[in-house]
Length: 331
Ligand code: HEM
Ligand SMILES: *[C@@H]1O[C@H](CO)[C@@H](O)[C@H](O)[C@H]1NC(C)=O
Ligand SMILES: *[C@@H]1O[C@H](CO)[C@@H](O)[C@H](O)[C@H]1NC(C)=O
Ligand SMILES: *[C@@H]1O[C@H](CO)[C@@H](O)[C@H](O)[C@H]1NC(C)=O
Ligand SMILES: *[C@@H]1O[C@H](CO)[C@@H](O)[C@H](O)[C@H]1NC(C)=O
Ligand SMILES: *[C@@H]1O[C@H](CO)[C@@H](O)[C@H](O)[C@H]1NC(C)=O
Image 1 (tube, rainbow, N blue to C red):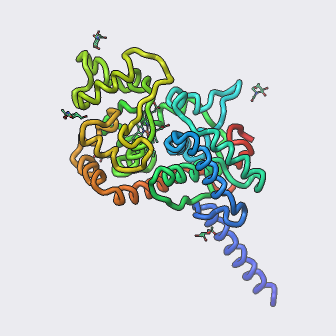
Image 2: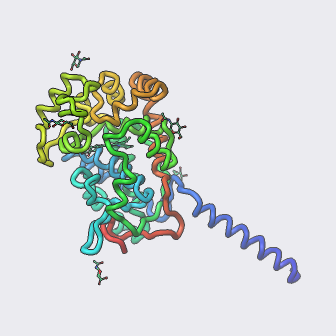
């Protein structure tokens, strides 16, 4: 081979290698850890199952944790970082504290994974897997989670409120919030169905979304809330109470089942938050609510697809960010 040919061959090789590497960096992949840490997803599944057996509430907790991770600085595990003397982290914003739960499940999985595959599997991926396993274990559907996320190195309490939609929001601002993350109005309606599992703190209902008492100065509850349900909620959540330990289920009928009861509740004016009831205030979203209420498999397929889409918000890939050793601490 002469030197000219050699040069051309080298150039081609460099180009091929470059495109292989940039395609690896470009996108998350299902089975990203097939070779580097084949037991990663299994370990997460086992830890979710173990925790669920003693406290099933961790399943909704982990689904919400992934959502709150993705909406603040992208799905980069930033919600898992602990505050330090110098920095108050996302998780300590009132939008997250004391309501978020499930952190220990991520810690336990991370510990076992680190013991097998040092500094290989990101905390952001562990959280995405754990949310998936939580959907499955609450009788939803299994879905494949593209992985290869890297962990972020920034977590600021000030980022939480501006990026997380509040329960007092009406449709136009919910729409805006999701659009700003690259998610559609339909994704918003579909993902809100996650409220078919889990709980709300009473303080969220008495101090943030004021539907139960003196709604808009009326001295009564929100008239769009079923009055029997409103009375039950008032019993559970006394006015002006600041007790942060009292909680109510968001779907009292099947609080631990990923089903479509959430949408049926909304149709019966028993959506818990203003943001839940808001789905009835536009003809398009209202017709989706009706369709989802009737067809669990239709909704579940859309839900799992929307979870995958949510899991891709502003992810760090390739050599960006880091792989944390401890999900609570920046390396
Ligand atoms: C559409 C805008 C949304 C709003 C305004 C909203 C708001 C809330 C609020 C206020 C709570 C109760 C927190 C508490 O006081 O304990 C909650 C709980 C929950 N949210 Fe959302 N959320 C929204 C969307 C989502 C999405 C997209 C998901 C996941 C895909 C999700 C999953 C959950 C889950 C599973 C819980 C229960 C958590 C637990 O039991 O620990 N939410 N949400
Ligand atoms: C990992 O293995 C699974 C199952 O065999 C396969 O579906 C997936 O495409 C593989 N992913 C990679 C990146 O090798
Ligand atoms: C906090 O900031 C001080 C001064 O900049 C620094 O010396 C210290 O190491 C920091 N502590 C932590 C936990 O980051
Ligand atoms: C959602 O926002 C988009 C973009 O601003 C707008 O075109 C659409 O009408 C909005 N939909 C609702 C129901 O607010
Ligand atoms: C109810 O709200 C109105 C208007 O915000 C306020 O003027 C009134 O004092 C409130 N009533 C009670 C009992 O708190
Ligand atoms: C509210 O719900 C109860 C059942 O919990 C039902 O009997 C009642 O008819 C509902 N009220 C309205 C106004 O729909």
